[in-house]
Length: 236
Image 1: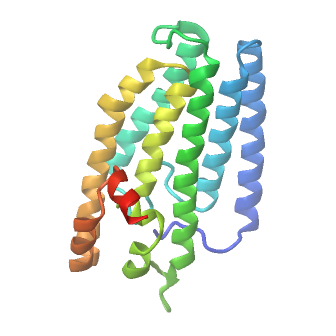
Image 2: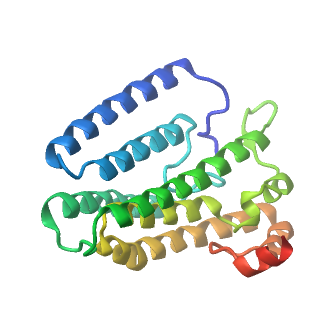
């Protein structure tokens, strides 16, 4: 939490902007050259991915973790070793390999995948911005503190206990569809989801220690990761 950025930083903003432009140009040139007739969906996804990462980076948020508590260095590293090769495989399979392509027109799963990926981005960023609004800076030390009561009242925290991890899972599934890869869906289920759950187990323990009885009561009524659709529908 201490790495989160609460005030505008000119140097950090300029650096983030420049590196974002660089990667947008890189992916545009690469994908239009490699896929002159099929570059639209992968290019939109790549640009969305870069812009989303830029926002997370600027605010000092971990790319694929929650940021509510300090993530486990071990599981954060293990997940990074999964997720970046995962995106590399999706691109390679779509451009060159064709090993696990969904056998229909790529635009159908591609458009669906983009919508899913954007949903994941929305869930992660809306939670991040809501979280930043409730942070209080401890006088003297300057350490950021998140009031647990206000945290648990956030809209996204009523969906599930870890909405940013849910956003990450949706992004992985969306990317697999965007690249029309059933292999990506399999990798998400057998590797991505278990790694997310391991990180959740670590953060649950941290939050239980920080919030005590409040978190115990909260987790009895709100699911860990997957929303209870029927219950939410009845409440509405």
